[in-house]
Length: 190
Image 1 (tube, rainbow, N blue to C red):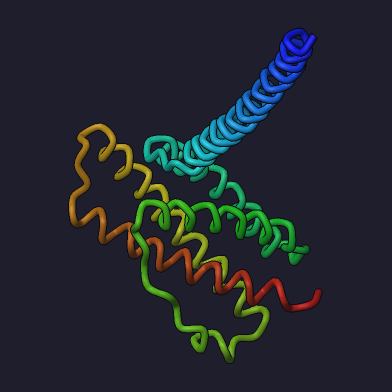
Image 2 (image 1 turned 180 degrees about the horizontal axis):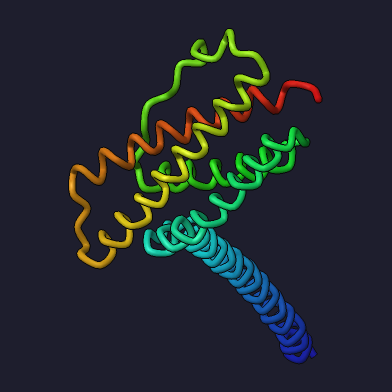
């Protein structure tokens, strides 16, 4: 009887140890799988963010060149509203959007110009600011068309010469000046 009791006890204990071991193995496997899933998802997220933030110079050049004619149309619209003494808010807003896009291009390509002197326009009347904005926008428009040709040439030859770089820096300075003028006009009521 004692022998059968020992066998019965042994059989009763062994399955519980096996069950306990299986439970610990499955728990460890679950933790490992959860950790691996988390790491894989984080890596995929990081790769997507890296790809989304990656700068593609050729694509940036295309967007820049495609925006130049649209900017010209906005300047023409602003000129018309100035001559007809209409509301220029819409064209100023559009122009400022283009200026921001062009400035972003120069920031991405690391071709940044100088900041304008805000005191330059301190004593300007609203009308003088409006006309100076138009003059500046027309000057920027001309330089943007020249810049798009330089960028196209650089893409074909894979070379940007120093004169082109200096020209683009000057254009960025002009864009900063135009942005300052537009921002001064946007705060004026009316």
